[in-house]
Image 1 (cartoon, one colour):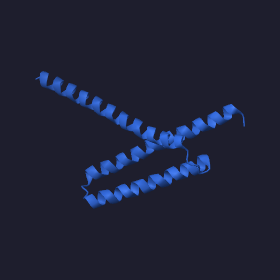
Image 2: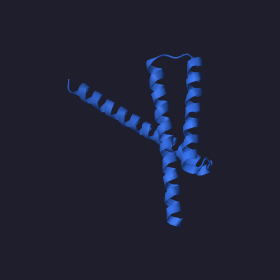
Image 3: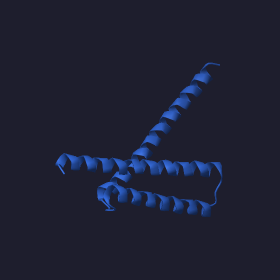
Image 4: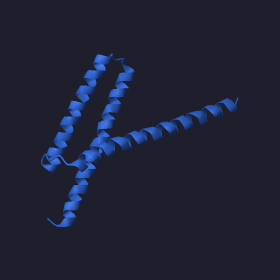
Length: 113
């Protein structure tokens, strides 16, 4: 296999792992929304978290198995973590924008009276 083909495969693998990190955080956000809609006691939260991490573990193992013959590679785990962190930063940015927009609209309404 030529060197450029190997690099492309590694980049594709990195990108796949990165996207899985984002997907894992989206899934956890869905769980958090569900918890806000339906109040949970601490036991239910613990069970949901255990199930979440079990599902994520299976999904990541499956990704590693399909993409890399099951070999655990440090950069793949780093890519998953980077995807998760980027998603969290994106949410913080969206929240800041939402707050500024909310205060601007509120200020506009209050001044127009």
